[in-house]
Image (cartoon, rainbow, N blue to C red; front, side):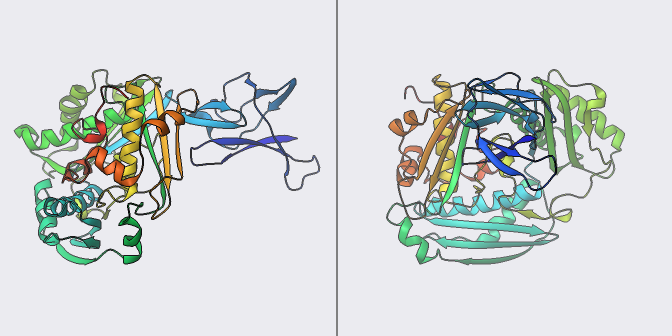
Length: 436
């Protein structure tokens, strides 16, 4: 018996089909071959187990067992490899409000970054924030001519969000390691890593629709809390989530912190009418709207949960629908390619889609610490076609070139720490150029 084993094989999320042979008498699987797929007789987007027929030349291979959940992916063929975008038949994305514990930490880290850049645009900043039950720890590395009070900045950010509990703040901040600085000072990358950028023509924001809707709900939830007197019972912590099926809204989830004096029934009615039905024109049926599913949610922020910088990287990017290299953004100055190169990848992908080189585009880049030239620059469109040559010919991905092109030495980062780094039109990496 033969079974295909799908394994992640490279940085672009591609897959190779490995054919394994298992004898009828049992024993360990034995590697047989990789097959080059010329044609697929049925889509590989069914839930396993699926029966699909693939052809290698004149030979047809019947596949009856799949060991990976491919029903959530769209698969494109490229020689022996599969390139995967998310399948729009069923997608889910989430967002969180500014009062969520992780987002509080992101905002504090980026506010400290902005304070440094405002005084010294060439500051080297790597700040992490951790909050838990009345305590806040700020740690990291700074090399800057700026004079800042990290604890004061954190207190001001916390209050501006709407949390007013007293925090016991500890700061442990030192200078950047000279071992790292020696590579960055010459224009090299501040670390090794892989970064991705994505764009799609399915929304005006060039983002997946589920992600756009989730962010829109969270933004309006905060707007209601701050500006609608009838919703003054809202509190800062909250989350939203949207599931689409065949591009139709199937499920909406909203969880919001609230004043203990409002009943769950009243809360649900107001959220449904004043938030969901205003933001989402074709809201799902009542049984598919989930508002504070556990009931009361009166304890939020650091009183309810810990927060940590960089723990919402999917909310920050593409809702978990697109690969992520793993490096967070907040608290890092643009010499850190985790941030600046991810912005550049998004900028390139968005412009390629806007100028109709692709309907969907995924750009990826990789670096070695201290080296200015990327180790890899790749791009693919929605069919799996490699369009990396266009990117390599027209865009410079060296760290200093990225910083100059996107004008990244300004104190612009606090606002990016909420509701996605790619959801605001006023950031330089969201600009659509007149021509490429």
